Length: 429
Image (tube, rainbow, N blue to C red; front, side):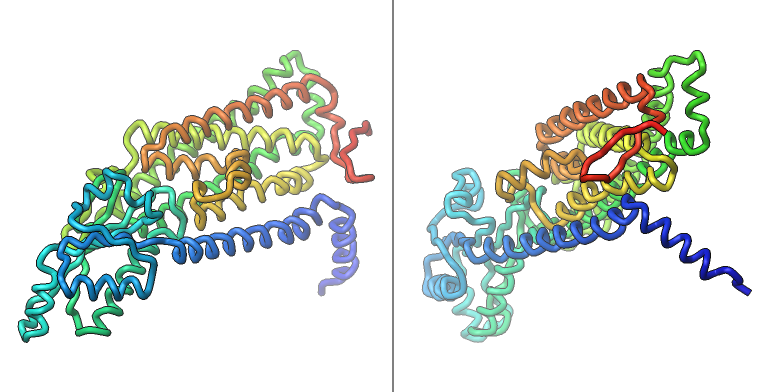
């Protein structure tokens, strides 16, 4: 039983060890990719902590009584506080005071707050003071968005423990696209963003890698089985052969983009059913403008389509430099970090908060754009989506031109990727 197992095992190990393409994909790339992801997550955590420390809580004191001053003093002992008087919540937004004070959250102490706390302490336990907390919903935020609202809630809970149980209640509201939405907590909306930020990047990541592996076998299998030589000697135009192969990838890309949009729309619809506001009623995401419009879905679909097309075309070109299917799949594996790193990083990061150099890197990677587009269509930032579509389309055209030049010569039969002396060489068998 298992006679000759050791011999076969040694033989297979030697073949694998002789193929540097496989070793690089299995050993070197993970050693690069995971530390980079670790740095990204560490940067995200550090950025969130730094923003929390630097953030200023804007307090609008419309009561100006003794208890409101005590409350403001307690807030000031725990965080940076700027106080305004006799200002409406909408005026805070319209005058750009949040940006002026570098704040994403503000608290309004309404008139009668001190009187209610005085009555509560006098024995009217059913009377409490209510403050209104407003958090800005940032549709491009990462996994740590919405921290500001949670911080305010925790500070108010600390004030209640220091003074009297449940003496102050907080009513959460959100600022969405410059408009105040009463009774909707920004943390609830951030939970929606979190689900979107995780689900869509992972879906795109799996779809791209799976599709590229299939496309990589298109040319490599014909080279391995020696059918490509016969195909190129037929009276069929070589560009027609290329377009035939690419057209199949276009169909696959189109179908994949449609299926992703259908699933994405169903996911958002399912989430809206389960989200409730402070009043107990369900939140209408369409009315809040947090569901992409028809035009937004179309732009997102186009972005997905061109991204898939560029990935599949690149897989076809990469497979031309391999001798067999295994080599083609190993070569395509070199592209995976350009898919995995943006997908995972954009779960944790808000690209708009990054330094310009790092932000430019993300925009330069074509596989970042459908994820950026998914966030942009929610906030109505269609310029970012259109830019991504144009950029990825140009990238695809360049890849297609390289593929057409490759198919126009005999290099399609002889091209091989060698790692001798640190550079690629082409030679004929």
